[in-house]
Image (cartoon, rainbow, N blue to C red; front, top):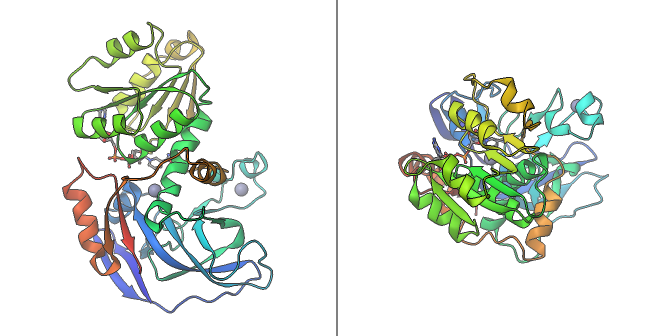
Length: 339
Ligand SMILES: NC(=O)c1ccc[n+]([C@@H]2O[C@H](COP(=O)([O-])OP(=O)(O)OC[C@H]3O[C@@H](n4cnc5c(N)ncnc54)[C@H](O)[C@@H]3O)[C@@H](O)[C@H]2O)c1
Ligand SMILES: [Zn+2]
Ligand SMILES: [Zn+2]
């Protein structure tokens, strides 16, 4: 079978591997149909992900059909259309016992710590598969995982009906956070430097968009929120300045949700956190968000139409990565097809 691997940083290629077999009672063999390319896959390609071990079959955003099951598998059968939840965890550490396996001390992400979904076939544990809503196309199904990241950010920020929610960044992740915040009843403000991205955010239901390169973000957000500031700020730009601005702009009793893996220190005086008693929290991957996103799709509340920018056959995987890097201002999600 074909797999897409990052052999060493900078070297992306197709390779041949044996089709994996079901070994354990809870194994599910998945015939992959689509795998999405994420910013983090590009980081892995460029050697910028500290957790990646090479060579690595990339891909954590993948969907497909069940091709075989272990003896103990009950929740899915051959032919079922599923999305894969791309993390495994120990189940015993403090985080796992707190119901937060996404930050398990031994968390393993498909395509990062272990081989991922850019392959004709992948074996995954039964607990990692979720049945797709009927009628959902493969292209749209591949977006479920990125939307779980936005859902997690809203969950961590405890977005409530009526909250002003500022999402910094109208890239893929910012857009998913903005959509989810809207579904939770927020008044959603999205900032970015690129008008094209902001226009798309607006077309997806953002209430206000601000080009923070052209307008004063603090002033505009104050006007919109009656001087209060956002109750929840989600940083999906993930640079030093946006983290600092997020703390400064957020309202009293508000929440700052940080998505960044950035290692650059920020300068934030503690007084800016305590005087408003804001909560600053990280949001990493997701926990229990697949059923939430799937439910929003099933009930017709979350539309995924038009979100996929382009689909490449696996034979053109390298071109797909190049396309993203060359069209960063307009690309939302590029998929690889295994059909
Ligand atoms: N915590 C997690 O679980 C998680 C998961 C996925 C991605 N991420 C992180 O989220 C970040 C965003 O990912 P993405 O795929 O959406 O990236 P992206 O490149 O698609 O989006 C970033 C957006 O920020 C905008 N931007 C850049 N500088 C800006 C500035 N100064 N002010 C306002 N906007 C600015 C860009 O125009 C772009 O639209 C990345 O840093 C990524 O590592 C975190
Ligand atoms: Zn991703
Ligand atoms: Zn654990």
